[in-house]
Amino acid sequence: MSMTVMAAPALEENDCTPSGELRGDAQAGQDLHLENCAECHGYDGKAEVIVMHMDEPPRDQTDAVYMASLSDAFLYLAICRGGEAVGRSIVMPGWGDVMTDQEIKDLVAWIRTFSDT
Image (cartoon, rainbow, N blue to C red; front, side, top):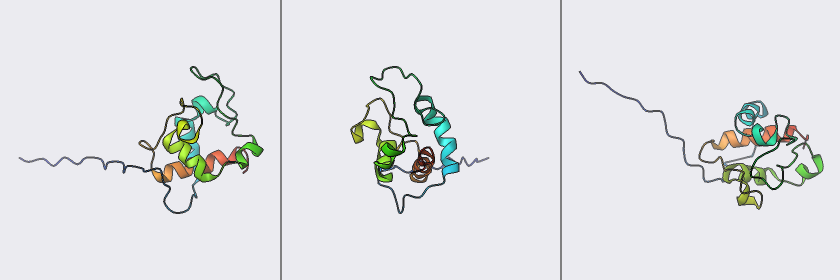
């Protein structure tokens, strides 16, 4: 008796170049943020948590002036490759090998809701 085993599709390697427009679904991004980012950046984006091994806390994502100075492409790259890739903390990991292109776009959209930018 032969048995066919089906494997889950492999996550396509993300080269950290967003495909198409950087439009994401903020609601989908909310779940991703809670699962992957809130531990350091806080559930509400205010980064009022103490993170071990960090010289300074993560940025307050509710700071509208600061967040308006960052492009969506910058946020996408920071999420995909990690803080060091954009001149920020080496403690922030890259998520490009875990999240799809669309998931990173969704996360950028959710982060934007903290500051309405």
